[in-house]
Length: 83
Image (cartoon, rainbow, N blue to C red; front, side):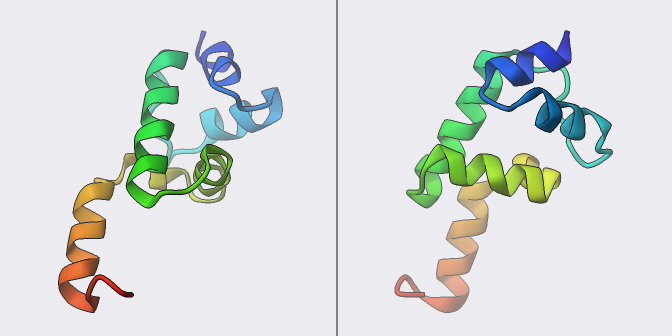
Protein backbone atom coordinates (compact mmCIF):
# COMPACT_ATOMS: atom_id res chain seq x y z
CA UNK A 1 0.00 0.00 0.00
CA UNK A 2 1.52 3.35 -1.03
CA UNK A 3 0.60 5.12 2.21
CA UNK A 4 2.45 2.57 4.31
CA UNK A 5 5.51 2.77 2.04
CA UNK A 6 5.73 6.55 2.54
CA UNK A 7 5.23 6.15 6.29
CA UNK A 8 7.98 3.52 6.25
CA UNK A 9 10.23 6.07 4.55
CA UNK A 10 9.78 8.50 7.42
CA UNK A 11 6.81 10.64 6.43
CA UNK A 12 3.88 10.98 8.83
CA UNK A 13 0.52 9.54 7.78
CA UNK A 14 -0.76 13.05 7.07
CA UNK A 15 2.33 13.95 5.03
CA UNK A 16 2.08 10.67 3.16
CA UNK A 17 -1.55 11.30 2.27
CA UNK A 18 -0.67 14.82 1.10
CA UNK A 19 1.96 13.37 -1.25
CA UNK A 20 -0.42 10.69 -2.51
CA UNK A 21 -3.05 13.35 -3.23
CA UNK A 22 -0.54 15.51 -5.13
CA UNK A 23 -0.52 15.27 -8.91
CA UNK A 24 3.12 16.41 -8.84
CA UNK A 25 4.47 13.52 -6.78
CA UNK A 26 5.37 10.76 -9.21
CA UNK A 27 6.82 8.19 -6.82
CA UNK A 28 3.56 6.76 -5.49
CA UNK A 29 4.35 3.16 -6.41
CA UNK A 30 7.87 3.01 -4.95
CA UNK A 31 8.75 0.93 -1.94
CA UNK A 32 9.87 2.56 1.28
CA UNK A 33 13.43 1.45 0.47
CA UNK A 34 13.27 3.14 -2.94
CA UNK A 35 11.87 6.33 -1.43
CA UNK A 36 14.60 6.35 1.23
CA UNK A 37 17.21 5.80 -1.47
CA UNK A 38 15.78 8.72 -3.44
CA UNK A 39 15.86 10.99 -0.37
CA UNK A 40 19.40 9.89 0.53
CA UNK A 41 20.58 10.49 -3.02
CA UNK A 42 19.13 13.99 -3.15
CA UNK A 43 20.56 14.79 0.30
CA UNK A 44 23.96 13.66 -0.92
CA UNK A 45 23.86 15.87 -4.03
CA UNK A 46 23.08 19.00 -1.98
CA UNK A 47 24.99 17.98 1.18
CA UNK A 48 21.98 18.62 3.40
CA UNK A 49 20.05 16.61 5.98
CA UNK A 50 17.40 14.13 4.90
CA UNK A 51 14.79 16.06 6.90
CA UNK A 52 15.49 19.11 4.73
CA UNK A 53 14.88 17.03 1.62
CA UNK A 54 11.63 15.66 3.03
CA UNK A 55 10.45 19.22 3.76
CA UNK A 56 11.37 20.28 0.23
CA UNK A 57 9.41 17.36 -1.22
CA UNK A 58 6.40 18.19 0.93
CA UNK A 59 6.56 21.85 -0.13
CA UNK A 60 7.12 21.07 -3.81
CA UNK A 61 6.38 17.40 -4.60
CA UNK A 62 7.86 17.71 -8.11
CA UNK A 63 11.24 18.26 -6.43
CA UNK A 64 11.51 14.51 -5.88
CA UNK A 65 11.49 13.87 -9.61
CA UNK A 66 14.19 16.31 -10.71
CA UNK A 67 17.58 15.22 -12.01
CA UNK A 68 19.44 16.86 -9.15
CA UNK A 69 22.94 16.12 -10.39
CA UNK A 70 22.09 17.87 -13.67
CA UNK A 71 20.54 20.81 -11.80
CA UNK A 72 23.69 21.31 -9.72
CA UNK A 73 25.98 20.83 -12.74
CA UNK A 74 24.07 23.42 -14.79
CA UNK A 75 23.96 25.80 -11.84
CA UNK A 76 27.73 25.61 -11.52
CA UNK A 77 28.12 26.17 -15.27
CA UNK A 78 25.94 29.29 -15.13
CA UNK A 79 26.85 30.77 -11.75
CA UNK A 80 30.20 29.22 -10.85
CA UNK A 81 31.05 26.83 -8.02
CA UNK A 82 31.09 29.50 -5.30
CA UNK A 83 27.42 30.37 -5.85
